[in-house]
Amino acid sequence: MSPAIAVEGLIKQYGDNYALNGLNLEVQAGTVLGLLGPNGAGKTTTVRVLTTLLKPDGGRAWVDGFDVARQPRAVRQRIGVSGQETAVEPLLTGWENLELFGRLHRLGRRGARRRAQELLEQFDLTTAATRLTKNYSGGMRRRLDLAVSLITRPSILFLDEPTTGLDPRSRSATWEMIADLVSAGTTLLLTTQYLEEADQLADLIAVVDHGHVIAQGTADELKTQINGDRIEVVLRDRELLPLAAAILDRVGAGEAVVTPSERRVTVMARHEPGLLAYVLRELDAAAVQLEDVGLRRPTLDDVFLSLTGRPADTTAMCDKELVAA
Image (cartoon, rainbow, N blue to C red; front, side):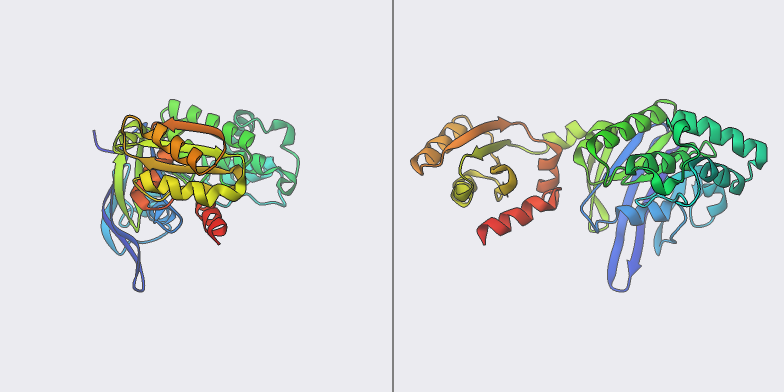
């Protein structure tokens, strides 16, 4: 079976900078590919090329068998897109937004109204249907935007960081809606900076950095690439974080990550019997008192740090620099 999305050697260049530099991807029909990467890695550019909003400078890409550069109209007829910024009109009601997009997609007056009603019910927006969307909460606007992307019942859906800025409850609700769409047979390419989101939703994860894929596999497959354990300690005294970090640096496979707001120090270390006991002895000898300690198997966060050289939560690195200063 041909993949629903196929990308070969995709290139997009801006002056001397490459947003995409030989990107290769495949997404099988009815599955979810999570595109994971730091800011500027090329995730959004990939989505914009695949949805015909940008023309590539090299390579080729196909969506549902159609060439995105040579057959853009056919591609647009088969996809739905929800970007980082919602596309809904704030001065229209939820109902009016859906009806407008239905008419723009040539569903006709009756067809647009019928589809609007179906989507309002599907996304639990019937009670807010007659309210202006400028008065919607962030989670409601995101649900409406997702509903708009499904006006034409697309077989392939592109979601570019769909839960950015949402509170945990709204994010969880969005995940449930996305899971329902996939279970109904929708193929999904999802870009995200939330590792938990990729872990929850994606059948396959591709880690992108500097415009190309640097690793790909299931969440479990990526985690097994890291030969080591995660050591975490939570201190009683925030002032001793630099000292604790220096001790963990001595045993770590990489630099320890400090999160001052949680008084936490984390490091990936080689898998070795007795290593945690050694760390505890060193911390005790330095009079570093702990509130919590843990030895854990790698997470997607550790995979991300190992592959890109920086944590997914960039505030953690900034926090460490502030402590060191």
